Structure formats: structure tokens, C-alpha cells
Image (cartoon, rainbow, N blue to C red; front, top):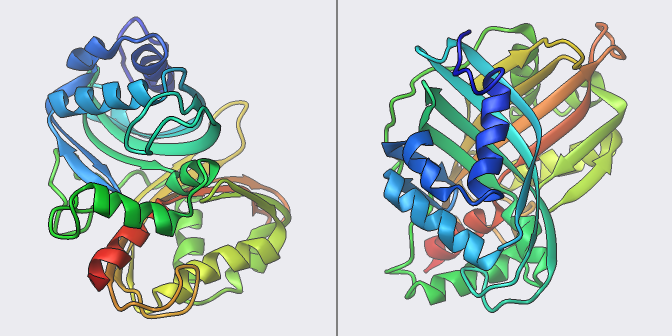
Length: 327
């Protein structure tokens, strides 16, 4: 892999420019680091064009002026910066809700939440992105439920007819990256576990998760062991029992001084037909974009197990689709 002399490697670039843009106020550097026609997908919407990204960045900083983005890991694939690299960047963010904005009147509350962003870079320019914030954690810390926040947001956006449309296969935009990741064994193992769970084979959890596994889940939830993993995944799948599950992107890594680890971007697309984690079945069509990171250890029946798992999806975008589908 080759890279610009300013950064030692691709993770150093991803972590470095994130700090430079957000914490060092180098917002104008987005003209260098983001391609003019970039596509940024979040569960809430699809944003195209660098100028729109700059506007959204400034709006976020106006609402959360002391926001930090602490890079926990960068799980990446690709051969060189010339041919393109894909990073799955997991961050822990802290912020004070000090300004009015999309989350309502300033409350002064202190927030902590996770983000995972998949970014494709060619040279030093990012030209394709999938960005998921733990909106459930954010709004709960501000005193909302995700359900109520989504309903209020629809009203503030002018009602169901005028509200911004969440990301779905119908609103998505094609970008330049069409890769699927790499063929490392750890990525394949995580993808297989998720596929088994989404296929209702919940035996995958006691078979493949360490009994002492550490879990970080949407809503800022920290949990441990098989029972918590089963409850989380069961609540999701039960609410969307017939939704189509797709593994969208898979990366596995073996790096010095790090445990084996993996990043899988996945989706669910189907009707809200079941009782689970999202209330009374509404029949609404819902698209869920999720990203799961995992670290592996040696304690399992085949000599490996998932010791740590981080999964992020946007509960408010799910509720927004449920509300819009019922409107």
C-alpha cells in the first residue's frame, strides 16, 4: 500500500483527517478530503455533493461545538490509495448540546455515543460513504424516546408529505465504490454468524460468541454474554421476520498488536410485521442499514469465538419509516 507522506498508513489518515475536520475546525479541508460529487448515505437521508456535506458539518458543530470524535478502530481493505481503499471507522463521540438545531432547543446536556462510518478513498479524497450514528443513544440522553423523536421530526419537517425520506433501496444513489471487501477468514466468519442469526438459527450465539462476550448495541446499550446477545438480535429480527437480510460488505483483518477482527455492513428490507423491538406491527416497509464490528478470541468449539461486538443502526430512522408508513 502507498499513501501520502503526511500519514503513516490508511488508519492514520482516517483518524487524522476526522480530527482535523471536526475538532481542529478544518472544515474547509473537506474540499481536499471529499470528492465534489461524493455520496454520503446515512439511515436518515442521502446527501450528495461536497458543499452539502460542508453545510451539514457546520450545522452539527453549531449544535455541538465541543464535539470530539475518538477513533476506536479502523478496519480496512484494499491494495493501494491509487486504486482505492475502504475503511470501516468506529468512533466514540462526546458532545455538549449547546446550540439549537435538529435535536431541538439547546439543553446543555452532555452526550456520549458511537458512530461507524464506511468510507471509500482514492488518493486522499473520500468519494463514497455509509455513515451510521447511534441516534437512539443521542435522543435518549436528550430526554426523547426514538419513537417520539421521529414523530416530532416529521412534524418539524412539514408533515409526512414533506418530511425528508430515509435511506432505502429506492432513495439510494450509486457511488463509485462497487467492492465487497476482502476474503480474510475473520470477515467470512462474522458474516456467517450474522447470516445464521438472521436466518433464525439463534444457536449461533452460544456456539460462536464467548460466554463472557462484551456487547455494544444501539441506544448506548452495554451488555454481556449469550442472553443479552440473543435478546438484542431476537428483538430486531422478530419485528421484521420476513425482511430480506443482505450482507453488503465484509472485511477481515489480522494486524500486529491487535486481535483478529472484522467489519460487516448489512441491511434488512421488508415490512414491520412482528412484535419485537419496535412496538405494534404496522406493516410499514422499513429499510435498516447496520454495521457490526467484532474482535475474536480463542475460546470456542473450533478454537475461536466472538469476544467483543459493536453493532450500530439508527432507531430513529426505523421509527420514522414506521410513522411514515402508517401516515
